[in-house]
Every structure is written in C-alpha cells, then in structure tokens.
Image (cartoon, rainbow, N blue to C red; front, side, top):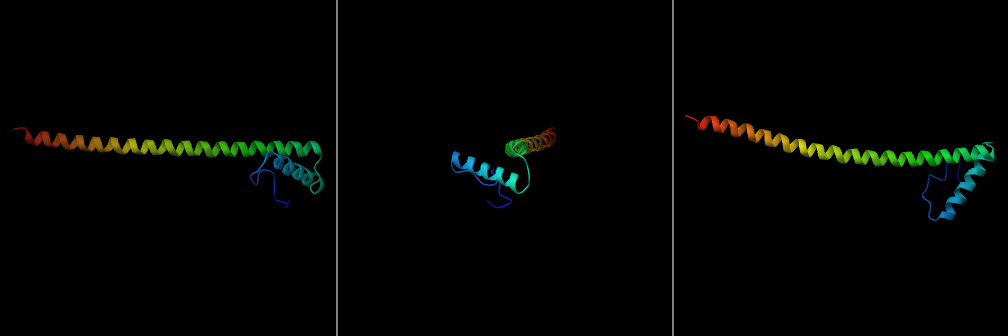
Length: 97
C-alpha cells in the first residue's frame, strides 16, 4: 500500500478487500504515523463519514442542477408567453377603430 493510499481512495471489488484495505491502512497509521489502535479506528470512522458526506454533497449538487434547469425552462416559457401576450395587446390596439 502506498503512503497516500487509503480504504476510500480506490473502489473495493469485494467485501473482503475492504477489510484488507482497512487492515493495511490501520497498520500504516500505527507503524508509520505512530497512531494507537483507538486513534486508527477513529480516523477510519471519520474517513468513512467524510466519504459519505462527499457523496451526499454530490447528490445534492446534482439535484440542485436539475432544479435550476427546470426553473430555467419554466422562466423561458413564461418569458415567451409574456412576450407573445404583449404583441397580442399591440395587435389588438391597432385593430381598434
């Protein structure tokens, strides 16, 4: 495992590989960085939470983009209908004697 590898930096292929990745990362935290076992558990838990929150942010950004697109479409349709209505009013005024 490279120094910058982590359990969340690459997609797991099987559940067993997740355990192996976490085990190796825990070992790296303890042996190279001097973190005790409890600290390593906290770090791994926080890393999982960060990954989950990042996924949620991406989901919310996608939802927001979809809503903004929908609003833009509705605004364009509204403007077109207002523009058409204003031209209709002008045409009606010109037809009156």
